[in-house]
Length: 228
Image 1 (spheres, one colour):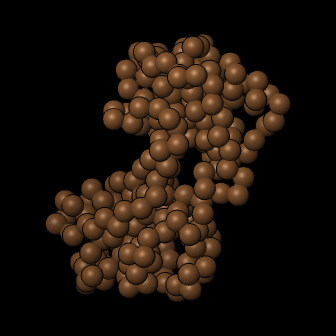
Image 2: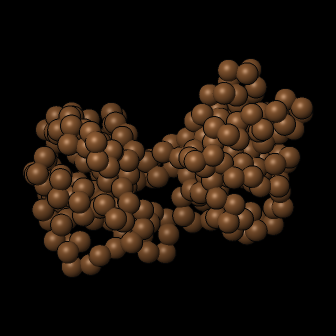
């Protein structure tokens, strides 16, 4: 374990969805780089793990790379975790990992949950070929991206926030009106919800009940037809 960077997946919601290897790794590393120390402390406290935590988020990742890699070069081991899921998948970690590889540091994956795959498994949509776009641009380039995706022949997976989910559904209703869509909210948590239907049908559900939380939106391939 000496002198390595561990990329550790943590639960997307339910704290029980963590692997034995992930727990073992978090207990054995010298320190943990996490997206939000408050959020990660909940997980670590639940499993009685006490470790030095340093923040590693989108705003400070570049400034933390030299510090973290310097400690690893001196023989320490570090685990990188995000608030939920797998680091680097629409979460901080990519620049740290890239720099570690460039420096010849051992980068070790400790796989586990990710919202992309969790949502795909219950979507009922084709999974043999899919494209993950994460959060599409908020403003500049958004329409261009939606137009491009409207011609996509593979299953599409997107992330969206509470504040823009209805906006996204309205846009899908404009760019892909007849497409079958699955929207997953708060996966693996107590208030997990899944909606299925066309963008117009989904908008009716959201108009009746404004929901909070993080969303995974899965869009059927262009020529796919739902089996009723």
